[in-house]
Image (cartoon, rainbow, N blue to C red; front, top):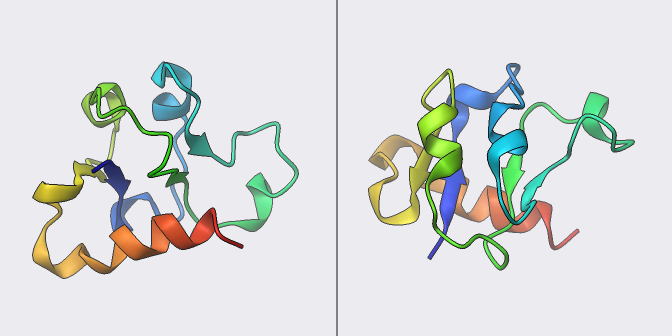
Length: 86
């Protein structure tokens, strides 16, 4: 299980979550080359330690524990995982 970034992040890419993540599992970071080319940030489900630090600072309330992702955004569980497979 992991935290998941969902639709409200699209077009926002606020990096507060990146700054508080103790294991650096949220990408792309502003200094990574693809930051400007993606529409949102993604959490690596294999690296997330489920601390919840990211969810508490998200200004658009886009981050949820995988078990709590609202029904309309369940597809973002797979979208986050796919970002790290490609």
